[in-house]
Length: 442
Image 1 (cartoon, rainbow, N blue to C red):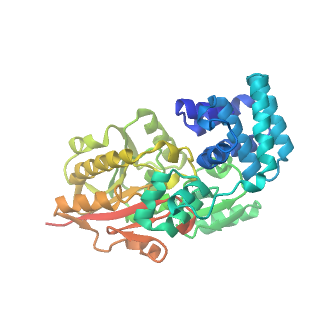
Image 2 (spheres, rainbow, N blue to C red):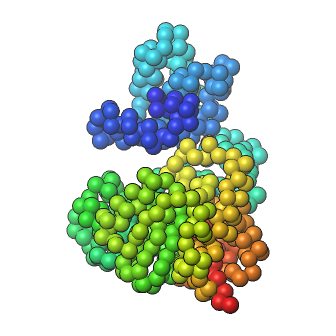
């Protein structure tokens, strides 16, 4: 309840607050799992919970004290979306919490609201005859402006599938460090330890692991055999078409997963300059590189807009601009993200993305390849940026071989502006956009 209240009042990140609360509480593994489910689940289903609560709370949920609102939302989440906690236990726990935090009047109100809801539990449904955007928004718990925007861009059916996929628990996927072990050997090793591990259908370097807990706590992770990375994200380094000995620039590199993957694909031969604007994030990149035994990665700190002043023009064989973006492709992992964004944010970030692309492109040698990627599904940030850049820079074009090895994704994904757009429902991975741009040899 305290974490949910702080997230709403202070706009704090739920994952950071949750981690610190769990460390202080020293709960059992199953209780920590339940606390995590209650926090992420309640945040994920926010507008649906409020829609139901508004029928039973005098003057509506918005008028309640923030902690009371959090308590009612969390309680209703258990009633509607969880099946192992008895309804009477939910009510009893909520009333006790209300007594401890508030007074008799509040606990009486909480008790009355929840009992009233339980008496009419069958009525907790979203009417079928609502306008499509409103129905999808409430059924799958997304802001209505975002649903309307996606309907305009992708159609009603695809939008409903996006929103449904965003509410699925994310799979655990790891990337195999092929400088140390092959994917086949790693799969055998995991199997011999009783893990349910299967090859990623999306990336030749990925493995999907079910029910294994935190893979970062394994010896395999510590010894550098694997990294934790979403399957869509693994496609980026592959798109760059690397060869040992190349000179590569990763413009916005933290926390370093894609830089490390590039180092692995180059067999640690050549050089990768991994830049990030934040000094403390530079340490994350170098820690990754040393864990994986990669010497080819050099971290630098600074604004990516200044990279063109720090390096010689046309001095890199490959450039990765994994641009800062709205992040709307990773809602499954960060449910609070969907409630904190606005249309203005998208327009603002698209303008920055174009400036970054224009700036770093001067560092690419003729014949070289620049990969532009984001973890969003927003056309304005994706093909919109690529098209605007190509229109203003005649010496650049979509790479001659188009998507290269990623052309295998054409059947399921969307081809947009010369790049590929992966939606969350395509492979049950993050929403991602990847475009390959080449500089023409003069």
